[in-house]
Image 1 (tube, rainbow, N blue to C red):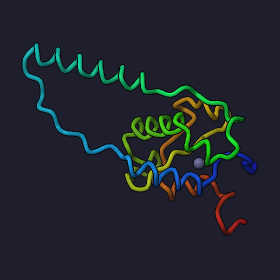
Image 2: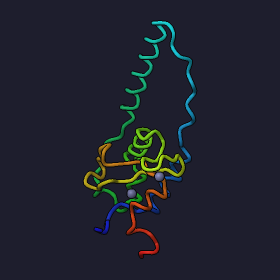
Image 3: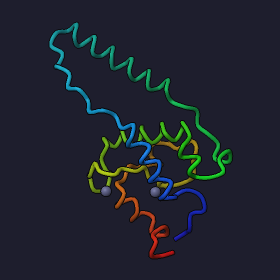
Image 4: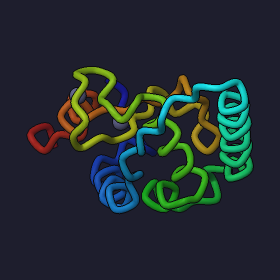
Length: 141
Ligand SMILES: [Zn+2]
Ligand SMILES: [Zn+2]
């Protein structure tokens, strides 16, 4: 296996995870189902506004060369946004085993670091993530 020279830093991932846990979204309130046409219309408008607001919060992609370390990159607004989005798209569950505990975001490839696409990333729990990085396990060092 090729050794990663940049990225796949599990300790940095774990620290980013701890920061993420502190700002985890609150459980969603269950809204009553819209009954009338006017209620449905209002709900649709609200969804549209929320989607637009999320889009406006999206930070600009970054250049990985501007970061000295991977940990520094993981602290960037871009990565924080990318991380939240990956978690949200995965429904806050590990995409391998389905657990909701100790989720991290794994790079399936490092080709677009700083401007990752949805398909470059996946939400994994810590054990599944560690299994993806055998080169970083203490026993092999
Ligand atoms: Zn898992
Ligand atoms: Zn990973």
